[in-house]
Amino acid sequence: MYAFDIKRPRSVEEAVAALADGEAQALGGGQTLIPTLRQRLADPGTLVSLSGIAELKYVRMEGDVLRIGGGTTHAQVAREAAAHYPALASLAGRIGDPAVRNRGTIGGSLANNDPSACYPAGALGSNATVVTGAREIAADDFFQGLFETALDEGEIVTEVRFPVPEAARYEKFIQPASRFALVAVFVARFAGGVRVAVTGASESGVFRWAEAEAALAADFTPEVVRGLTVQAEGMIGDLHGSAEYRAHLVGVITRRAVEGALA
Ligand SMILES: Cc1cc2nc3c(=O)[nH]c(=O)nc-3n(C[C@H](O)[C@H](O)[C@H](O)COP(=O)(O)OP(=O)(O)OC[C@H]3O[C@@H](n4cnc5c(N)ncnc54)[C@H](O)[C@@H]3O)c2cc1C
Image 1 (cartoon, rainbow, N blue to C red):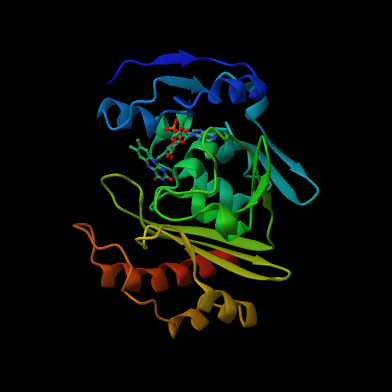
Image 2 (image 1 turned 45 degrees about the vertical axis):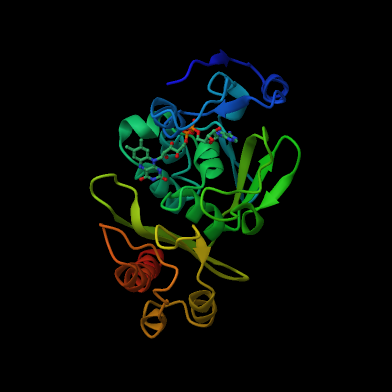
C-alpha cells in the first residue's frame, strides 16, 4: 500500500469540497478499493471516507419510487427494502458474504461498475436514476463499459431512485469461489414494458437484452425466451466458463428470472 491521507467529512458538501483536490478519491465500504490499494494498483494520495456521512444512509419509499442513499450498505438495503421492492432486497442480500454486505455500499458498487456486479443489473433493469451532487443520470446512460461510468472525477453517488415494477426477479448463477455472478439477470415488468438486464456475461459490462424485452412485453412467460439466442461473440470467456457457455446461460437464467417474477 502506498501512503495516503484520510479525510472524514460529516456532510456531502464537505465530501465534495475534499474531492475537489484532483489527487483525492472517495472511499465507500472499501470492499473493492482497499484490496486495490493493498496491491498497489492505485495511489490516490487522499481518501475521502463517506462512511461517516449520515445523510447518505437511508432506504425510503416516496410515491412509487424507492430512494436509497448512496452510502447505504448492502445489508441495510436487504433489510429495509424487502417490504417495498423484494427483488432488489434479494439482490442486495446475496452480494458476497456478511462482511462484504455490512461494509459495501450501493454507491461504491455502481461507481465501480464491475462487469460481474449485481447492482448494475438491478439499476439498469429497474430503469433507475443515479443522483449525484450535481445531476441526475438515467441508468441507460450511466453504465459506459467495463468499470466505466458517466461519473466525472470526484462526483459522488448520493442517491439511487428505483421505480418499483409490478413484478421483478434477480436470478444469479454464482461463481462459487467469489460469489460474484457468473451470469445474472434482473427482469422487471412495468405497466409500460419489460426490462431485462444481464451482468457477468459481456466483455462490455452490464447490458439490456432487447430481444427478450420485446418478446416478454408481448407475452410475459418463460416460454417466449426459449426460442431466443445470445451471440457468444463479445461474451466473457475465462477459466470459469467459455463465452458460448455464458451466452447459453443468459437464456436459461432469464427464463428462471421470469418464472421467479411470476411466482
Ligand atoms: C469477497 C467479495 C465478494 C463480493 N461479491 C460480490 C457480489 O456477489 N456481487 C457484487 O455486486 N459485488 C460483490 N463484491 C463487491 C462489493 O459489492 C463492493 O461492496 C462494491 O464493489 C464496492 O462498494 P464499496 O462501497 O465497498 O466501494 P469502495 O471499495 O469503497 O469503492 C469502490 C469504487 O467506488 C468509488 N466510490 C465509493 N463510493 C462512492 C460513491 N458514493 N460515489 C461515487 N464513487 C464512489 C471509489 O472511489 C472506488 O473507485 C464482492 C466483494 C468482495 C470483497
